[in-house]
Image 1 (cartoon, rainbow, N blue to C red):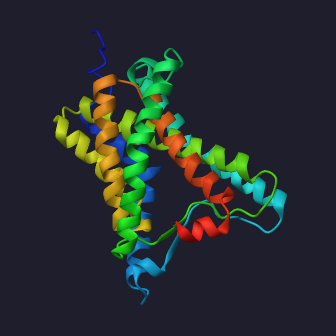
Image 2 (cartoon, rainbow, N blue to C red):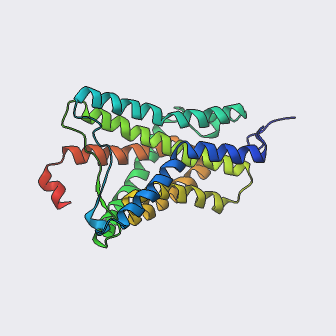
Image 3 (cartoon, rainbow, N blue to C red):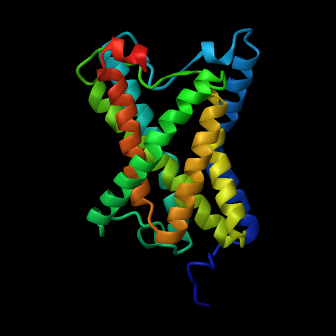
Length: 257
């Protein structure tokens, strides 16, 4: 029997369990915690807009212990990506070809990634601002590392890790596996978008909507182009700008923003 990209070795039942396990080990787990975090904020007795959602916090007051925790967190967060790629390889779906995770088109990937980042980043900032004014979002603190020499490199690594994890799992892997299961196009796009929005719920309802819209765009791009690399580039640019920009901007600018 000839195995094709749309005919994986695993059965439908196995694929269903596989998807559930991969998501529960990665961003599905994050979605559950995000929902619990949002419920905690909504029942805290204070308006959501007066509460904070902190990304990249320090893990220790001891600088090199903090650095160790940060690097270990980045490393182990990528293990589900390796699992997803292994499972695709097991079913003879070569990830470089199936997901477009390679360096065959660096110029095109960079160009598309930059364009997507610009097209999503500016409207995204406006949405976050509007959601905060309407009381639908917590105040987002993109970075809260101690002022140490390694803070910026770690924030850049964290941004790239987020991009690789989310785009490989939520777009490349999930879209591919749902296609293997025979799901219709808009159900696939909707599932990917809702998952992306759900694990941002700890930031508020505006973050859910904004990331779900981003999920629709990214999923459709992958279905059209068959490449995850531009999405990784775009996501990395957005997160690096947020994390590093928040760290480097003067406090007076941050208060104005």
